[in-house]
Length: 392
Image (cartoon, rainbow, N blue to C red; front, top):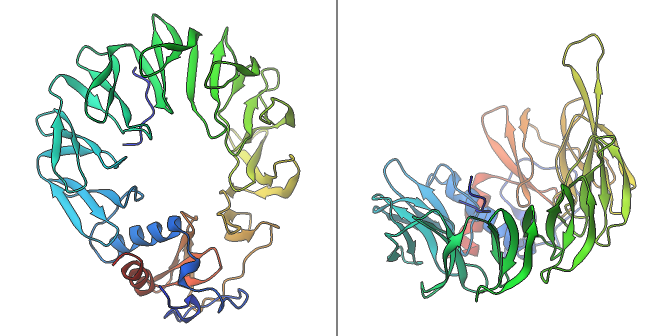
């Protein structure tokens, strides 16, 4: 199988027109401009769903998100304007002003921000997103990968069997059963001596495996963390989790390879906003496959700052709230583990997890509101109003 990473206001918020409220501190000094661009784009995504423009869509990227109708595909802008491209059957998210796609005749292509098909590739199987350096990977009909620039000139002909990524001038590929990396001129940067090479993670390192043991190398091929780990995962927020071979338990290392969390958990999530979810499983004897799962949170020192008392837990959003479930039911907590008490007059039928700063709460009367990271509640009309103010 081919291996490639792809990913197909000025009004104050305290005056939002909502009847529901909560017990958050007075936020009258926080106005609509307090939302980050990430949160504003999520508002645009929610508004497009709530006003009936599209039933569902991906996150916005470069001000656009892919939309699909019954017989066509296209993209929606943050202001709600939709452009359909009837010639296409597939479309990826925009990157550096272009979106990779596939025509209904199965010909790969690129589309510009107006929806115009600017280039087709009859000799290719697939084309992909352009990186920050205006270079991308392509898959030829000969079943090999190559590299081209934004003028659609081939820099490296289709010669490599597999690729895990192209980023920051580095093309990580497999050739004759071994993995290595070359630059845009096809010069070898990382020797072809590895069983596998991963993608460039947020610590600027590449997960490398040789002789069934893993570690990390940098973009020059220098070994940063020795290849001594049985099972290792990419860095996120400068920490990487690993699995101990003897116990099967998860632990965590820092950027130097020092173990900061000994392998003692059945699972560890990736760090997000300074915290990671940890889990332990207890198998009930005499009750078949029943498993009791307990989840909690650790910080970057490995300290359990929230005990393992939850059956379900999700990552904290950046302002410090998370969706969890315990023996009582679903709830939201802050970073101290304290439950957030929502003062909503209508019965609550469902709490949703946070996505880019907002969580949907469904009400017994069929309505709903959205909870933000400030513990404020927004109705449908608030979401649409904010979208219209942010993206006129």
